[in-house]
Length: 333
Ligand code: 6V0
Image (cartoon, rainbow, N blue to C red; front, side, top):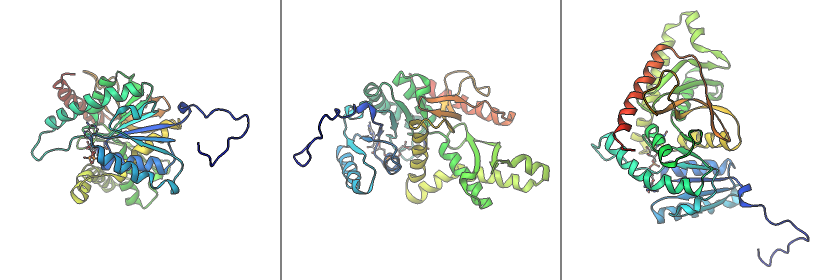
């Protein structure tokens, strides 16, 4: 308070801080900042706390966002290398990660990121024991498992951004092909984020009309090939963007902000995100995290949809699960 304002009489004390929505973002690189700025402009949080290992970059990003306050909803923006700044978060989003060195194997990169997570997840979980964790760092499926193990959180409160982004790329490309609004296109890509993702053909509908059965009835075979090509384009799209601009940021920013909205506002929407997949669609053999269409709400993952998958689709999922379990077994967690 300052002398500029005089309190009104008999006023209540300020609301306790736990009545406010707080989101923390760990890692203020391209991806973390795109997420933070989308959450900020969409007015999803009363406070955004940023954490990174680089104090100068962190303070620079915090100030740069704070300087936009005159144009934004009133959101408190804090930043520190100390996890204390994240205390009492409703949602914690982890985007910190080591970058792949030229010639480095995926397993080696994973081991370096697991080492980072050992420094990130325990203090983050301790500062916000009731929060929901969204993991974005790659490889996201294994790192979501790692975060679950290191946090000790119940499994409904740990998820990965997974194929939410792949699915939105898929919807965009189908929409572009048909020249309709992407919001009218329903289509799910599930499984491992990236190269071995599985497109659920039977899930594609446009304006409520299932596309595959429509095409089959009309015997329009070439359109099926077009859909195959579109899935391949989705798989290649991250590489394309990284090749052109060096990293991806805007789409992952919107995709994670969309998850944040569903969770914080208890929207109970279905998103393809990384969840514990054991027991679904014939996935077994251990605790493996993969993207499946999941119902999300204020409690995190409420349920996984139990829809029909073709044998080919569930076999692909099971194959990804096996590969991921093999990688996990080498982590010593
Ligand atoms: P970046 O720009 O290199 O940012 C990473 C940030 O993490 C940097 O600011 C680092 O200082 C910070 N960092 C490193 N170690 C620590 C630590 N111990 N504690 C706190 N902060 C730390 O990378 P970028 O933002 O481009 O990508 C971040 C991660 O997101 C990578 O693992 C990407 O592969 C992954 N992505 C995942 C996507 C998905 O769909 N799941 C999509 C895009 C990128």
